[in-house]
Image (cartoon, rainbow over all chains, first blue to last red):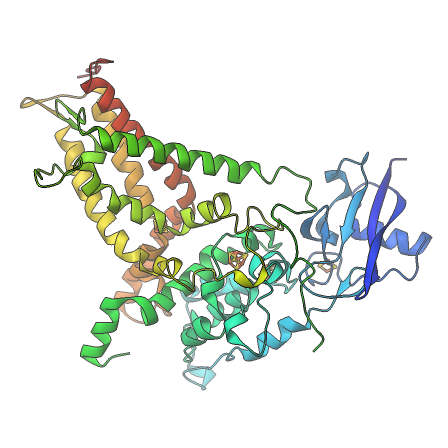
Amino acid sequence: MAEARLKVYRGDSGGGQYVEYKVPVEAGMVILDAIHYIQGAYAPDLAVRWNCKAAKCGSCSGEVNGKPSLMCKTRLDDFDLSEPIEVRPIKTFPVVKDLVTDVSWNYEINKRIVPFTPTNTNTDEWKIYQDDVDRVQEFRKCIECFLCQNVCHVLRNHDKKDLDDPKHLFAGPRFMVRIASLEMHPMDGANRVPFTKNEAGIGYCNITKCCTEVCPEDIHITDNAIIPMKERVVDEFYDPVLMIWRKMTGKK
Amino acid sequence: MANSRSMAINDKLGQTERRDSWWIEPLLSGLGLGLFGIYATWAAFQGTNFEWGPYLSPFYSPHINAPWFPLSPAFLILPFPLLFRATCYYYRKAYYRAYFMSPPGCAVGPAQKGGTYTGETKFPFILQNLHRYFFYFAAIFILILTYDALLAFNFDGRFGIGVGTLIMVANVIFLGLYTFSCHSWRHIVGGKEDCFSCDKMSKLKHGAWSRVSIINENHMRWAWISLFTVGFTDLYIRLVASGVINDLRIL
Ligand code: SF4
Ligand code: SF4
Ligand code: FES
Ligand code: FES
C-alpha cells in the first residue's frame, strides 16, 4: 500500500514545530482523512477543527504545502507522495493549538456591518425577481472558511487588523462580499458605502485577486463584490462630476 | 478578544511554503508588459513610417498636425491609452504583482514591510479611482480606430482588402472587447443599480449590465490580446511603410 508522509504543525500560541507522521493511503483520501488517521494511530491530542468533511461548513481551513485550502477538499492523490506533505494552520490568525486558529477577529468585523434593513417591512408585499437576486445569491454561497481573509496580503502580511483604529483596519474580502450582498439587495435601504470606505478600508485592497484564487465556493470575490463596491465608493467620494451634480441638484 | 497578530507579518520578499511555480505568472506578465512598453516607446519616437496606403498605425491615430510640439505626435496620443491601461483593474493586479511585488504571488511574502503598506488609499494610487474617466477617452478612441479600419478598405477610391486591412479590423475588434468589458463600464451601464426590475429603465440597464458582464469575465484575456494586436498593427504598418515587407492584397 502507498504511504504518505505528513509534516504536521504541532504547537500553540507560544510556538511549535513540524512533526512527521506516516499515513497509509487509500483511494480518494483527503488531507483531513490523513489527519484523522494520525489522531487515531499516533496523536490523539492533535487538534483540528472540522465538521462536515464535505467542503460546506468552512471549519477545516489550513495551508497544505503552503496553499490555503480546505483540508477536506484537498486530495492526497494530487501530491507527489515521495516528498512529505506539509500541513499547517492558517497564518493570518493566531494559533490556539496545532491546526486550530482563533478567527474571532472576523466576528468582530461582522458585527460592525449594518445588517439587512428592509425598505418595506411588510414582507407580504415583497416581490423579488430572479434578475434582482442573481448577484446576491452568488455571495450567499460563502461558507465563512476565511481562506480569503487568510490569503489576503493586507491582513496576512500587513496585519491591518486594528479594531480600535480604522486607519489600520481592513475588513477583508469575506466582509466585502457580505457588504456587497447587502448593498446590491433590491429590498435593502441602508447605505454602507461610507462605511466601506472609511471603516472597512476598501482602499487597502489592491485587487491582486488572491482571495478569488483560494475561495472554495468559487465566488468571484474581486470581480463581483470588491470592484463593484470600489466603483460605488468612487460614485460617492471620488467622481468630481457626480460630486458637482449632487451639489447642484441637491440629490443624493 | 485575544491578540490577533498574523504569523506572516515578518515574511520576507518571496518567502513562502508553496512548492509550485507561483513565480511563472508574474514573471511572464512582467516580461509581456515590459516588452510592450519598450516597443511602444521606440515606435513613438520614430515619428515616421506610421502610415502606408490606406493604413494608419493606432499609435499615430488620429492624425495630429502639431508643428509646435517638439516630439512625435504619438506622444500626444499614447498617454490616453496608457492611462486607461495603467488604471485598469486587471493591469493593476498584473503590475502590482509583477513590479511592486505587492504581493508577488498568493501566500508569498511581499516587498513592503508590515506597517508601510497603504494600498490604494494614498497618492498616487488613490488616483486609480478615476479609471472611469480614462474609459471615456478610450471609448472615443474606439470610434476613431473604427473609422480608420473602415478607411483601410479604401485603396485610392476603390474597395479593397489587404492583409493590413484585416489586421486593423481585428485590432479594433479586440480593442473594443477590451474597452467595453471594463469594470467601470460594467458599473456605469447598470451595475450600480440595486434593483433591476423596478422600472423600465432598470430593465434596460439589466440587459446592458448582463451583456457587459459576459465579456467582462474574460477581461484579462482581452487585455492581453488587444495589447498584442495594437503593437502588431503598428509593427505591420511600420514594416510595410519602410519597405521591409510588401502588403498582400487579397481583394
Ligand atoms: S483582491 Fe483585495 S481583498 Fe482580495 S486578496 Fe487581494 S488585496 Fe485582499
Ligand atoms: S468568500 Fe469564499 S474564501 Fe472567503 S470565507 Fe467565503 S467561502 Fe471562504
Ligand atoms: S470539514 Fe467542513 S469544510 Fe472541511
Ligand atoms: S477595468 Fe480594465 S479597462 Fe476598465
